[in-house]
Length: 177
Image (cartoon, rainbow, N blue to C red):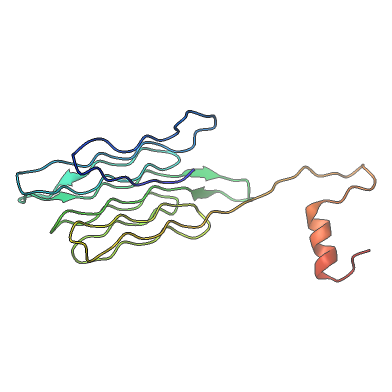
């Protein structure tokens, strides 16, 4: 479940999410890159998140430029004991003179624009890294690292069965038998 940002220079749609289709879903489609006037390059569409599609780029009022699309939202999970949203999509980079899109909830990074750099996805969320703007001076950023959480059933009646917490405590306390 990663937010993936794809920029198509010909104005076509964003990259498809969850391809090939599996259950549970592994991401959503990225937003479309917008067209614009004859001189517009168009901002990038936002990356799809685990819970929602990425936003399309949008026209910047009074100009020929396009703002980057916002990243799609991630998905909340309580497997760690508290609700945490992860795998937010990245914001798309903005066209010349236009801001980048916002990263989706769940760690997605913001896209770059003329006056600000893109931001990386948040660590331990698997959020996508913000997209680059068209001016070239503000590059794209890296996606956030993922996290592996192992949830195991509690074994209370079986003999000779160690749960991972017991093993860890024994090693830390240097009391491994």
